[in-house]
Length: 134
Ligand SMILES: Cc1cc2nc3c(=O)[nH]c(=O)nc-3n(C[C@H](O)[C@H](O)[C@H](O)COP(=O)(O)O)c2cc1C
Image 1: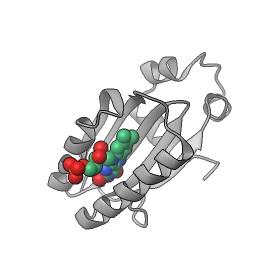
Image 2: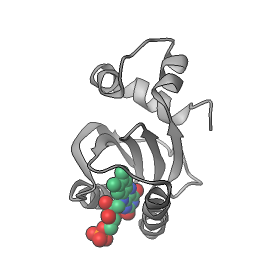
Image 3: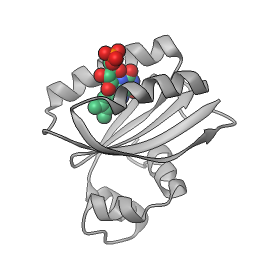
């Protein structure tokens, strides 16, 4: 088992419809590769956890990396994992706001970019896995 967390910014704003299409496509391909995880959409920023066999995770990530709909991808952490956080999700999804993050973290980050520049991998994993809005 292997996992990877990255974040990226949307190049042009996603609509509810384009997000739905993206998720449908992602879930179908992830199911084929036995990749699971979660995608967070936070005010134009995507934070995603991918988990599965290493070659499968790398394969999916390589495709995402080439995707022109997002820019400035940054891998926060990747490495071996003992278990999956989302074994039943070919890609869980949640849309949250900066206010949600600030409430969860009891902080006053002025923006998502500022939050991401300071967030440790563990904090991001907590945000992804323990989101109280789940
Ligand atoms: C924010 C974001 C997250 C994505 N997540 C996934 C994903 O989890 N799995 C996936 O197969 N494609 C995902 N995609 C779509 C890929 O970038 C790519 O379009 C898709 O895998 C098809 O690639 P292919 O044409 O090379 O098969 C995501 C795209 C974006 C913009």
